[in-house]
Image 1 (cartoon, one colour):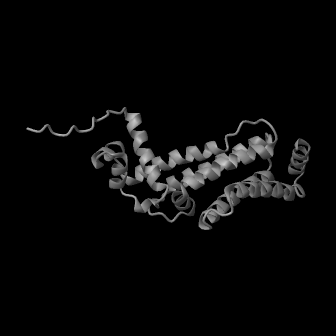
Image 2 (tube, one colour):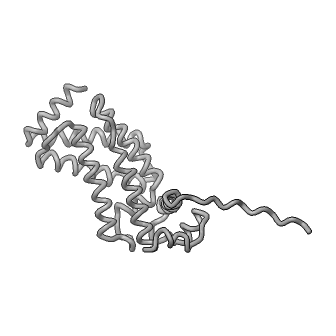
Image 3 (cartoon, helix red, strand yellow):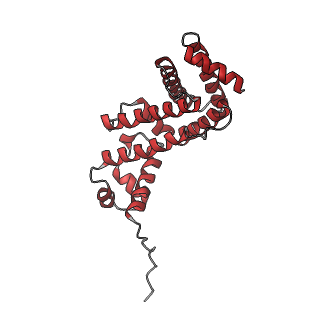
Length: 217
């Protein structure tokens, strides 16, 4: 009798390892397909596990899995702006944008679905997760600016620029990722400096900041 072919050994993962594996599989799918086009069967196949196992870790089904994957992506996005507070501001901001645009490049379809909304799996919780990323980015940037107590005009300027970065990223994807990411990065940094200069005409706090940045160059 011919021996049967050996089957691959099943590797037992810890609860956290298995959960991370499922989230990575889901994120890889959400990166290139809108959420409503991804099923639990797709996630199970990508992870090399059964559908019941996915339900075991995410009993809330696709919605719970999507929110968990979104939180994981949000944490990665937040870290994009977590740059050491050393050296001039512009190079620091450039490095943060490099990481941000790399994330956008790697998660193109998912990034578009996330920011444009309209997904059937979008809820108040997913909206709060996205808004949390924006607020975290604003906190990081204000920290980079070295302003302990930013006034409303400066806070608004930073948050408006973050919105502009998101919009530019979506347009960049729609334009087949043109111009090249390094050109887009430099353009966005220039825009940040420009909007600060405009706000400085109406806000003494921002004016002092712009003067300090000019002296730092």
